Amino acid sequence: MRIVLQKVSEGSVDVVDETSGEVDTTFEPQHIGIGYVLLVGVEDTDGAKQIDWLAHKIANLRVFEDENGKMNRSIHDVDGSVLSISQFTLYADVRKGNRPSFVKAGAPDHAEQVWHAFNDALRAQGLDVKEGRFGAHMRVSLTNDGPVTIIFDTDELGI
Image 1: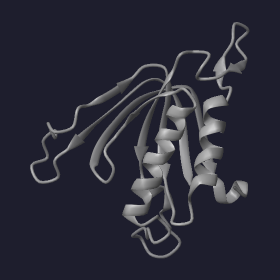
Image 2 (image 1 turned 30 degrees about the vertical axis):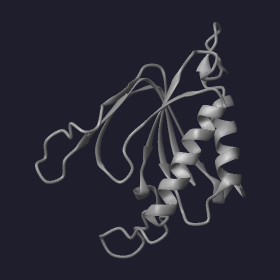
Image 3 (image 1 turned 30 degrees about the horizontal axis):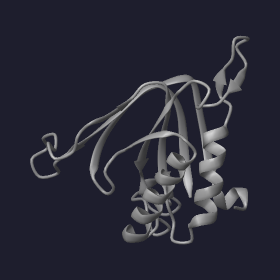
Image 4 (image 1 turned 120 degrees about the vertical axis):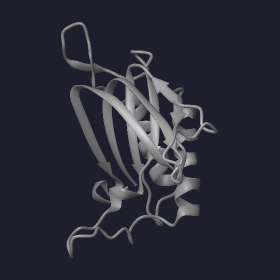
């Protein structure tokens, strides 16, 4: 799995109907205040091991400032929330040509299942998790705080 974590003071997502270009009214826009916006990519080899490790690490990561200005507080300590966005483009391969290849991205059925299981694992860690819509054209807005952006790649981490 690949996750781009961004510490935010606020974040939101809505869905756009690809035919009309208008906001899709069947999706209730999601908003969070302080917390994380997570861009989540899945490959076919991802499963419970990666989900569990990432959910635990993200829930306990200390990147929020304490009273001394040091990154020493977790998302739990600041009563933060998570906005999770599925994003297969994190597996783009741009080595050849000018059009990215996404062959390393997980098959849609598998990726959707893993993404939902990951979100549930974050909830099991006690986090409030809002979601985009898998496979949809989404508009994601955020105010990065810090800025703090951390990239997790379970292949690189050996997970």
